[in-house]
Length: 419
Image (cartoon, rainbow, N blue to C red):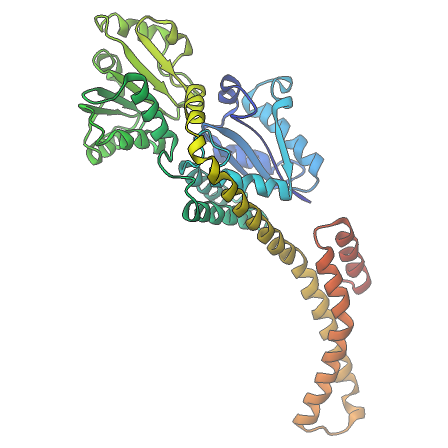
């Protein structure tokens, strides 16, 4: 049995393919049920963000689990396997755990050290727990990953300065425009990422922040807390004709602003340019809108290039983070090993104690009348013999746990002692 991670991320595939493969949050219950109904998968968590779509699973057989997940991607995205199979990342056991720890630490993000990914890892785990698709293997793995992510951010400076995709998006807009002072900005989407955009703008000298969202109450709440103004989503064209910057990150499964929508807006702007930063995956804005005069359209590819420029400041922290990940991986493997052999060790000792107690009960008549002290001595002798006999098999089983030899020893003990 193996813990496996199979998926795609911003390092392995272009944005246009990644956005076709992502899974909407509303579909997670359905896809988790789909995954765990497949032949080789017992537990599953899906991590779908603007940077990645990854399936973490406990598989009865490694190759069978990989095949099940590859077919899941094909069935869910309707993308032919020949378009994505060669791009899939596939890791198992220790390498899968190391990868998750690195992801939770922000090492595998477009913005190195970003803090949003830690919440996304937690949410994906909690969703799996709510849907009953995580159990004794993935639960401790994800719990440990969150501990690693918190430790990294406490003990290193990896999250200093720009610490989120939202902050990076605002910083990129600021660089492009030479500052945001006096600018009017429209934020579309008031989820975690959209609120992060509005929060990054707050207090930055912009003249006005407008917040639009599919759910009006959410837009009002975010706008009120951050000194902005809530606007209706169906009034976007009017507001787009007036603002200087559009920042968008919704959870929509398809484009919400087509080329034609923005073409009509451009004609109303009187020749004034507009900067659009679209960090949604899938994208909110039709990429063809970049061809319009007066429109500058930036997306996650541009943000990754922007973030790469600032990476030098944090590069020295990466070594410290990797050292923490390695140490935590060793701790996780040790704890997992102990958990994996604990049931059979307990069963073996219980069987030894059962035999010892049965023999004492059978022979009590031949021992004559024993007072309490004498009986304690006899029971201690019997328990000591059982303990010494089982000590070496137990040690060897623990030392070999997690290996093919360990599996053979465990199976032999089950057969020999009828466990």
